[in-house]
Amino acid sequence: MCSLLSPAVKIFIFLVDDMLIVEQAKPETVDKVCEIVKKQLALADTTSVTGESKFSDLGADSLDTV
Image 1 (cartoon, rainbow, N blue to C red):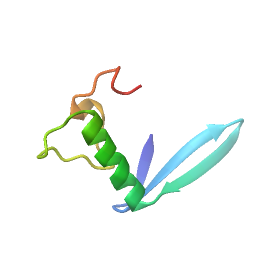
Image 2 (image 1 turned 120 degrees about the vertical axis):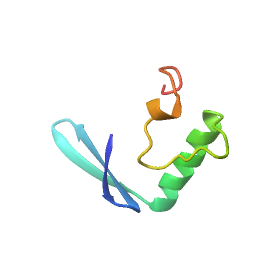
Image 3 (image 1 turned 135 degrees about the vertical axis):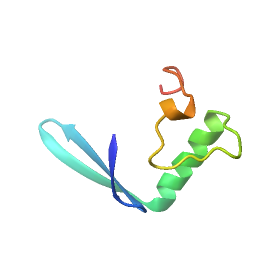
Image 4 (image 1 turned 120 degrees about the horizontal axis):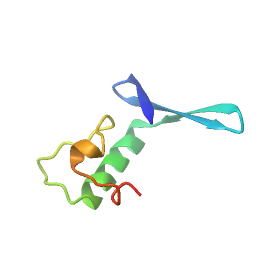
């Protein structure tokens, strides 16, 4: 889904109509998404969610990822 350019910046690569689109997420955006994922999955406060976290590692099932 994404690759790590540096600890603070995420790069997302999409292929749309044979065109390669590269998007960069701001660190605060990644942090906000991690907060939302943690809340939606009802994870314990001690659970660490980062930009590198995988849904399967967080205990999410196929319905959680939709």
